Amino acid sequence: MRTLCLMAYLVLAGALSVLAADETDVVLGDFDQGTYGTWKVEGQAFGTSPATSDGFLGRNRLAGYQGTGAAYSGVGGDGPQGSLTSPEF
Image (cartoon, rainbow, N blue to C red; front, side, top):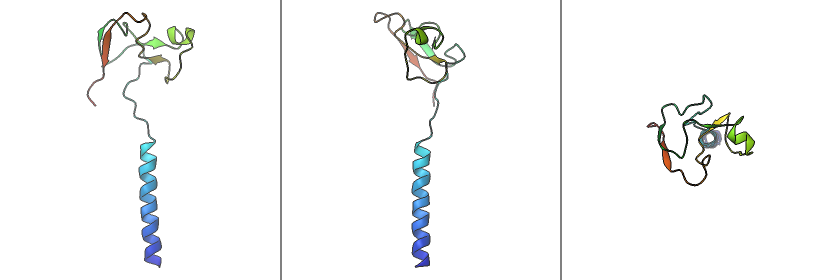
C-alpha cells in the first residue's frame, strides 16, 4: 500500500510540474526601448519604431500588449505593407 501511495504521489507531482511549465510565458520580443532591436523590419507597415502606450497605442486605446511598446502594423492605415521577423529562437 505504501508503495502504491508513493507511486501515485510521484505521478501527480510530475503531472503538476508539467502543467506549471506550460503556464510560463516566453518573451520573444520586448519593444519597450523604442526600437525593434534584433528583429528585422522590411517595408513600411511597422514604421521605424514600435508604437508606444504614450503615443499611438494610448491615443487609440489599443490593448492586448505588455509593457509600453508594441509592434503594430496599422499606424499608416491599411495601405503600407511589410514584415517584422524575429531573430532565430
